[in-house]
Length: 298
Image (cartoon, rainbow, N blue to C red):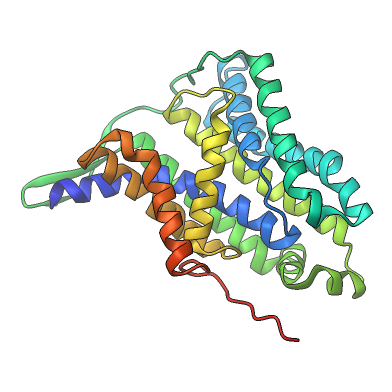
């Protein structure tokens, strides 16, 4: 029992990172209505921004994280401006958005591969590593590394700030209203293009934060966004598309499931378990754990 609980604790930090990716996914999908495959590349660019800031500019953790999030927000807005705005103006976003997203994702991924080289990079040590004892079960200490603990806390703080933004600010409330009906919101006088830009900025900042946190744990490389983007989508589906709380829960559950699979079964099944869970959810409960079921009336 203690072994299983330890694996669950170990998976919380990775789950928090997945949750950040998933919330970025579901925010754009819920408000703009497209599956933004470039989100994984923003995650990758955030990881590289953090690497260059901490390695060459010798920045500490917090300033490097905040600048990486700002860079991710700018990158996401630029991808929207050059990739999706022309389609929105022509009214073809619903038809062509998916293919455009895949094309942009591939372009950014392999441009980064050419610019940064395919060799994995490693962050300098930004935090002191030590084991923190959380509690004891049957004489066994349940521990978590100080790095994983700080990443989990940082992820939860970012998500709490985001929740406050959506519930306490005018722009946040307008974005939530836009997720219900953006056209009607525009007819009521809201600047829908501005709201979409803010949506991409928020999504990009979350993706970059996830990439930065992942870089402090593992090596980074130009194609890292491909698998991370898919896992973020799996977490969003598990939690429920459109639900921030659901994406948080989905990310934590996927992170825990991966860690239990890796620790108790085999590391070879670590990535497969995410997509197995996603397929089961789509078959059994397509709206996810906390998603909404909308009925279209005629």
